[in-house]
Image 1 (tube, rainbow over the protein chains, first blue to last red):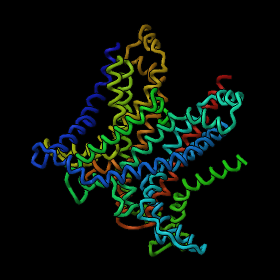
Image 2: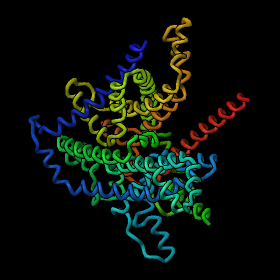
Image 3: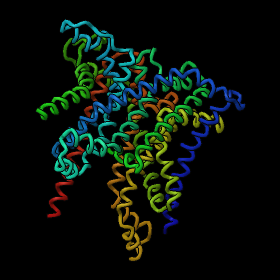
Image 4: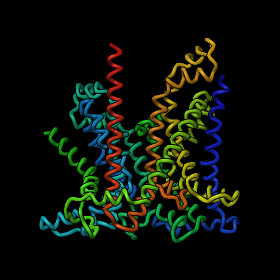
Length: 275
Length: 269
């Protein structure tokens, strides 16, 4: 019986070999060959020329992740403190914008941030000076935070609701004040959610290529834009594009490895997955 | 005092989350000739009329739905089978399978997209055949949906009592029938959730479709080209229609689950 069950996963194994493992091997192969197919290290070496793009992506991604954490934590905490019935409504309201295509959500910010946009119109109406917001690094960070903050709030919320209230009461009974309870009990116990949230925001933020294009103008090129240009853009060069992709993957794997050091039991993996 | 602060914070957060969407919706009813995105000049439904007359949008919508149905169906069947297989594996092969399953969820989307583009271009070069299109997008969508289905079904299988399946067989039920009569009803909630997730992920996907589509248009790809080329309130109308559809779907799903819960409570009494 058991051997029969195991065979059921055979089609999946074949499928994933074809569509996940083989493509990854192709990326590696393209990264280490030139146009004629001969082995070369040139692609990997020339990724170094773009170190400023890599640094900018990592920096903006890190800023967006930090802002999401700072803004998202209080929200998750407030929701977790509500009565159970209202919690599920609030969670749904946090997730609802995610159901709208992210291109449209980002497009909406274009309307708001433009030089002749709604925020500037409102500022002018109030007699305040206009601000230049679109096509700046700040606009890119804003777009990242807006698109990915639900991925921060949800895992945080799910760990915060799991904290046993009696643990908090015990701390209070032992004489800890509110601040101390929060810093010494709630924050440490929510670490798996923090880690899960950080990975779930950082990975898509670092590798995005639409948000920077729409809100950042031409001056805020990110890794994603660079890869896009090599495959479907003006600078067609799949070999270089593969090399950049490979480096991006390695960077992300290293970041995830570092994050996993803080999360020994792997519980953060589960916190993030919910519909 | 604390409560007021919490309320204010919640309000500001939801303002941040919903203001852009509200702006999109309001300006979809804007009656303007100059296609200005930010000046209000009266109520009109003309962008909706234009939207439903736009052949390209309707074709893109049709492609998106065909792909989503195919990807959801295929990934649900393949994924459920895989989950059953993985569940009965020993420790080491199980770990290998779970790592392969988790990989596409951890890997940056753009890298997954690019790698599949290389594969399809390579395959076309090798075996000939038509270039990228519906088939390659569907294959790519099945691939990124599979892990979500598996991760929904596996916990249900773990919760299930294994002896149920054996008991059915001991009572003379052939394995296939035992599966459909005993196992499937037990894991059904996970299978359905996985399928809904696959369907919505497929409809919403842009990055992977973008790299595997060739010249075929799906709705997100079309939206992308709209935001790049021309500025038209048609996009706003489209956003509003999609948002309304999602809202309706969510309300239906929630009412149904609430009803199911109510019934379950009644039965327990």
